[in-house]
Length: 177
Image (cartoon, rainbow, N blue to C red; front, side, top):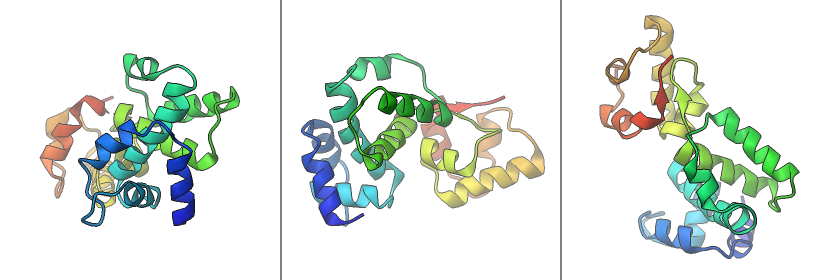
């Protein structure tokens, strides 16, 4: 995405508080910068940076126009497909957002309030919801295919090459079936 589009996203979203809060915590290319954060997030360099940009957009589209944050955060975690349905429904009801803004909202919701059935999840869902690097997500799937379903967090922590701390950090987003 071009710098002009990133600046447009920033200008179109007057609810800048969430982005300012995130910008204080995230370093983009060694510099804390709003446009840099948004540009990097849109380029999908990091799922967390992309989610930060989505938080900004969601703050404008969802929290200020429609229902507020309470509705999002009061409910249970949703599977990625459920968030896709919810955002599509939101857009069909008249939420004013571009396709790119809706994409960022989806990433934010999946990353922040998503859940995965670890025994059925795609690599992309593991990357988006759990913020696992793609190689780790592929390792989870390969281990699952070779050894069968995971029964608990201990099983998942035993996947070779996966940092158990990453699994523990997202334990409440992982569902075993």
